[in-house]
Image (cartoon, rainbow, N blue to C red; front, side, top):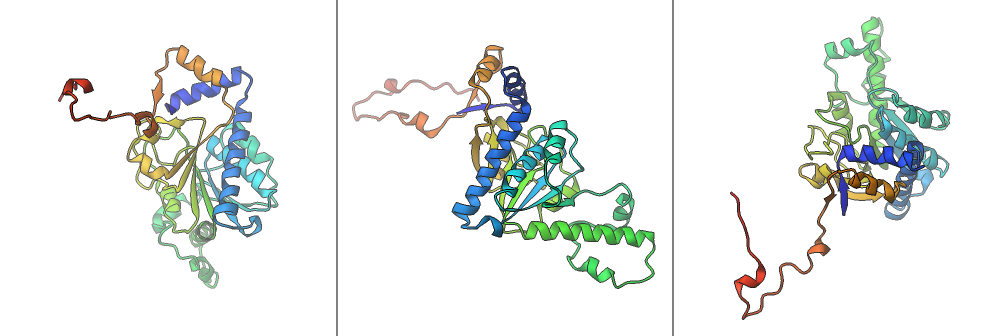
Length: 305
C-alpha cells in the first residue's frame, strides 16, 4: 500500500490543483467521505436513525476544521443533530472560513471550546480545568449574590465548560478535527481536557488523531484516542508507526480525488517512494522447506549489529 509523508501530501495537493482538482474540491470530497462514514456507522452499526443521533465535531482552526464543516453541512440535511465545538479559536484558513460561512447557524449548535482573552488570567487564578468542574456548579452559582466582575467571568467560564461536557457526553459520534498532519509538539491543557471527557460516543479522527506526529509516529500526552481514523488520499508514514498507530483505531483510507498523475509527477520529481508491506505480499514467504532441502536454497542473511 502506498504511503506518503505529510510534506509529500501537501505537494500532492499542490500538484492536484495544477491538474485541475482544486483544494476546495478536495476539501468538499473529504467532507463528503467523512459524512458517509458517520452516516454509515449510525445507520448500520449503531442502528440509529439520524434524528436520534447527535454528532459533535471538535473543529480546529485549520483545514481539518474545514473538513468538519463540509461534513456537518451534509449530515444536517440528512436529519442529524449537529454540534460544533470550536477548539483554539475560529477558523484561520480561507478554505475553512468558506466552509463555515455556508452553514445555517440557526440549525446547528455552536460552542466556544476556547478561552477568551478576558478570562485567561481569571481561570489561571482559580485553577479551573475541564476535569474538576461539575456540570451543575454554574447553575448553583446563579443563586449567589454580590458577585464581583471576577466572579462573573468565572461563572461564565463554568457555564461554557458545562456546555462542552454536556455536548460530548451526549454524543453518539465524536469527531476530532482539531489538528491535522502538520501537528508537532504537545497539546495544550484545555484541548487535553476536552479529549479526556468520558463519553460512550464512537470516536472518529479526521485524517490523523490530534496530538500525533504524522511523520515520526510520536504522540503528545493527552492525544485523541480514536475508534476509527479516516485518512485522506494515502496513509501517512507516522500512522504506520507505534505509538501513534494504536491511537488511530481502525484506519480507513478515503479517495478524495487526487489524480493518479499527481503521485506519478511527485515520484518522478525525485521524492522517495514509500510502501507499507501487507500480509498478502508475503504469502509465499518463508518458502516451504522440504525434508531434503539445503540451507542454501533459502538465501543468505547479513546482520549488522
